[in-house]
Image 1 (cartoon, helix red, strand yellow):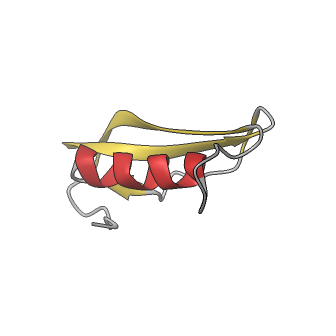
Image 2 (image 1 turned 120 degrees about the horizontal axis):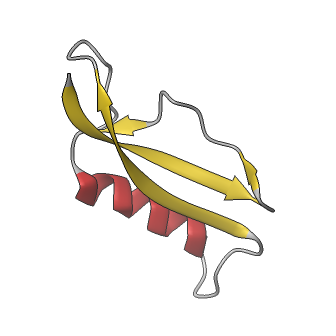
Length: 65
């Protein structure tokens, strides 16, 4: 087992992410969390929250970074 970071996305309080959204690097995970929350403009997305949760995953896990 190794430490990884799962991207968690909530839309209006409902989880919209999957357990497969896993990154080795917390900075890369936070990059996507920030982009999801901010959207394409300077104002935050309405009722969308994203964050990175540390989890333990098997070594054979596919990562997105």
